[in-house]
Structures are given as C-alpha cells and as structure tokens.
Image (cartoon, rainbow, N blue to C red; front, side, top):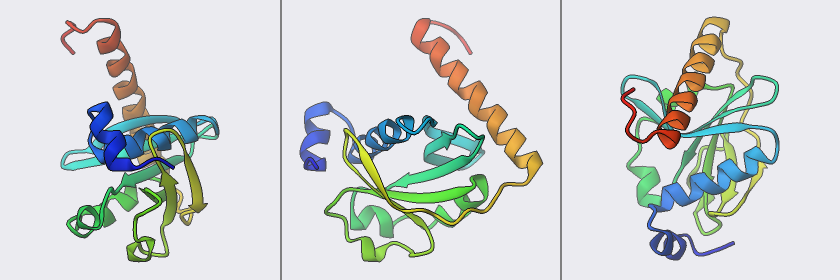
Length: 153
C-alpha cells in the first residue's frame, strides 16, 4: 500500500478522497457502482454509496486519521441509509478505534481489501426505492455535467 498523505499531495486530492477512489475501484471489480460524496437526505453526506449487482446498498465512510475519526459524531446517523456500513482506512490507521460491529476496508488510492463485513440490516422497501432512485438521478446528473460542463441542472 502507498503512503496516503504523499499520494494525496501528489494527486491534489484530500486523503479521504484518495481512500474513496481505492474503495470505488475495488467495489467496481465486484460489480458495484459507486458514488462519492452522496447526499441521501438533507444534512447527510456519505463518502461513498455503493449499489451492488443484486440491488444492495453499502455505505462507506473514509477516515484518513485518528483526528478525522474522533471528530465525526454523526456516523451513526448514516446506518439507516444502507444495508451494510463500512469504515475505509489506510493500513496505518489504528483500527482498534473503530466499532467492531461495523465493516472494515483497508484502502489506498489504487485498490482496497474488505477485512470485515459489516452486519447486514436490510433497508425497508420504501427507503430502498427512494435511495436507489436518488442514486440513479445523481449519477445521471454527474454524467451529464461531465459531457456538458455548462449544463444547468
């Protein structure tokens, strides 16, 4: 694995964005589609939302340091937005800080490895439909902005 801070500096990204890229690459290799910085509802911003090949929804929060983790008091509010919840950290992160009842992914900017699956808590049908539709709309809007940067959405 690569030094996260050095990689972030070279690529002009924040360390959490580097982690998210590696997570998205890994999950894509398993048939998932990912959106970074996904907002499922007002006041909530998930680092990565992943939609799996069977319709499963995973929430992944990327933490680049102890301070980043300890300053985040809102993560439990994200549990209700996916079927599984994961932390993504680099190999130097003190993983003993992370709640053991959540999933764990070790990542860098190029790939990741799931070390521990988060427990599955299936979303209610109405919420699943709403989140999946929002996922699709956001993904389509982002694609359109790539193709037409001057578009007004």
